[in-house]
Structure formats: structure tokens, C-alpha cells
Image (cartoon, rainbow, N blue to C red; front, side):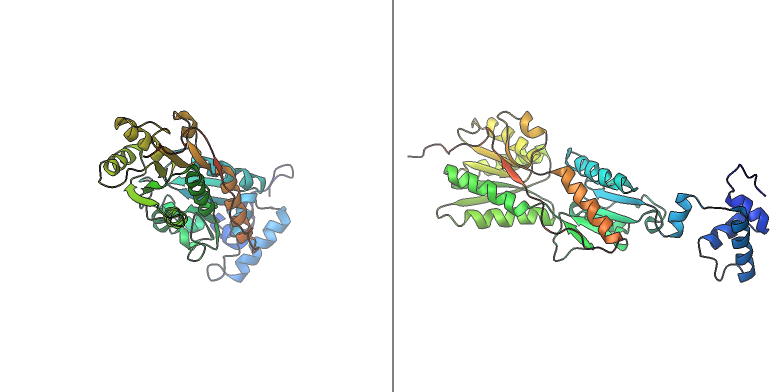
Length: 339
């Protein structure tokens, strides 16, 4: 028997009951039926009671089917936006005794290997960006309690969805540029099959087409500066009205647009206005500073974690999209006068 001054362990229980530690784990984890006899199970329970054995928190969590660990699945960490999402999620998780494992899809948005021998055994739930849906499927995260970020709420894999109000952000950009007098637009669209980018394209077209005389050209591009540079260059050399405003799906694409416009001798914003989306640090590093929509990444992560906690507890998650707002800086101005 263990010393009274020493906390008894599962090994002590196993020795007292004359069984293996594995048998103790099965019995105290209530997984013994069909694997050990009723008499053996009772002997283990009696030994544990006599010794005053109390399983530690980790063991208790496993017995209850809770590891108090969740997985955050995001695209590759190429900007500070998704690290901000992690910071917010981890803050709420820590306040509730949970840990968050961050899992960036290695190829950005493509398939990925399962980082766990068994995700269902290692995790309580998953928070995932729709931009990393392929990675989510690869790790079988869709078989766990799941909250989707940036996802169509009418067709989501998840038990809940948490979204930024991207539609309203797009409306704010369109309204701002139309009010300045712009009528010829280029949309630098991220070439990613994701709901959030579909919303941007649909809502931009819908809002612009309410004003007679507008033109909208769409150029699809990878989510990187060089891709945006190439797409903008191609659009500028294609016959048709030259755009006076370039609407970019994120701030990195805007940086590529800046390079292309300057190589064509065009001034920002005197000749062409440029807008972004995200409001990452790059937005104020550009010259002139970028007019863009501020997305609160940390609040996004906080809401995602709160939603998952609600799902795990059988509660209804908070509803409603997270508000966003346009930050007006030096990259937008009225279009040049056309005779």
C-alpha cells in the first residue's frame, strides 16, 4: 500500500488488486466490459477506494471523453491575420481550461497529412477556416465537433459557423469608390474556391451594377504579390476602358497592384485608386497607405472558440456576423477628369 504521505498512483492500485495497470485504466475509464471480468473490475474499484486513489485531471478528462484540446485549421501563415485568429481563440480557450493546437495547411489551402494518429482520440473539437477545407477533410476533422470560419452558413460542414460581415465590407468599399466618382473597376479576385471570396465577387458586382455606366473587369490571381502584379499588368494592357479603381480581395494583392500600376507610369491615387481587405500591417507600410476594410482577427478567433465551447456544452452559439469597417487612407481619391 502507498505511504499515507504519498499520493497513490494507478500502479499502486494495480499492485493492490493484482492486475495490470492497463486493467486499472480500463476499469476506471469505464471501458472494461467484455475485456475484464466483473470480479476483476470490482477488485480494482475496491483497491482504488481503499487507497484513496484519485485519477489526475488528464486521466479524468480521457474518461469523460474530453482532452480539453481543440485544433485550429487555417491556411498557411503567410500574413499575420490567421496568427491573430489563433491569439483570440487561445485567449478564450485558456480561460476555460482548454489548449489550442494551431495547424496551418502546409500547401496553403491544399490537402494535408493527419498530424495525429487519431484526431478523434486526441481532440475535443475543431475550428477551421473554409479556405483550408481540404486539410480539414484529410485529418477527418469533419467527424469531430466542428465550427467553421468564413463558411456558407446554409451549407457548412460544421455544427456552427462564425463569419465576418464580408458582404457589408464589400458594400462599404463599393459605396466609397462610387461616391468618389469611379465608374471603371478592376477586381483582383483571389483564385481560391472559397465562400468568402465568392461573397466578395458577388456583392461587388451587385453593388456596382446599381449605378448606370459602370464597368467591372475581374482578374483572377493567386494569393501572392507576384500573381497580383501579373494579373494587373494583363488587365491594364487588355483593350477596353482603363480602370480608375482596383478592388483587391486582400492587402497583399493590393501590394502587387501598386507595383504593376507604377511600372505603367500610373500614380496612386491620382490616376488609379486601390483598395484592400484585412487591414494587416502591410496596409500602412505601402505608400500611399492603403484604404482597406479592417477585419478583427482576434475577435474572429474568440468568437470561433466560444462557438465551439457552446457546441461541446450543447448550447446554441452566438448568432450574427462580426462587424467590419472601412479604413480610409491615401490610396483612394476621385478619378482623373476625363474630357
